[in-house]
Length: 371
Image (cartoon, rainbow, N blue to C red):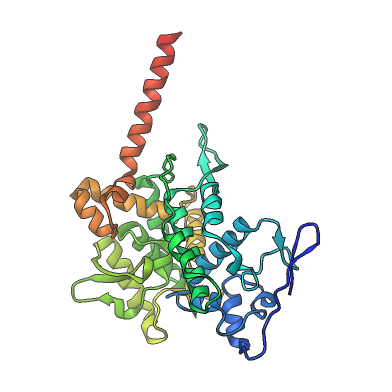
């Protein structure tokens, strides 16, 4: 499968499976297509392919999907003129061994993202903005891992790995996204969900409570297993970013909906994961719930409660803001599982809102004086 430039000329002649390489089995192909890869592309790879090995090393389907999307974008950043037969870059036949750390550093510096920002009328609008320092560091980490797996099979010079590690990612000043969810808004959603006694309804009530009153990320919901719940001291072992685990206590607002869901439907008797996808007939399937599913659940709950849609991460921001106000930044940092205090401080949405209000007030005052 050759890669071609947009003018149709062949640029690289990369054949798929070579003699002696073990092709992927059908169940493996199905697994990797679940990460958003086309079957044609996956079948161009093989069992020991560096990209396959990288994805197989990740700890959850959620991570695999996220990393796959990042790898796709890195490939397009490095070779924007290369497309495959269906208009998408094939990350398995992409010439990673020809890429240089210096080219990646330049592409990373110019990297932008699409953000949805509220205008002065409260309407969300798309905005192209420089990628944040955290996003750039994430892309740098993924690219370094890709090149490391290629270096393991002697297709990339190990000096390229060191060069990638030395790339400096500078901080970008950008307005903070997100919002604090008012009490009357999340209470309306909680009240609506409390009236639903179906399996799906009680599942959704527990999920909403864990996001709002335990500060979980949406990607962490589907990773919760029955063994992670400590019924004696009412705490939860949370599997977070980088496969890190941390045990945190659950307040009544999070514990009671979770225990009600487990006591009523006893999902632990059927499967390891507590929160799984649900069928239309209100039965739970075996597959763990993914982040996009959590987002759909919250949107559906907001619609049922008659309130404006809430982003799942805004519930985590609200949890952090409340805990800073109640217990201080140090305790909030511990509960949020942040590595440094600066991250926790950025989650204080009330301080951010107050700062913006003061800025706008001062700006209006200055304009009045000037006039």
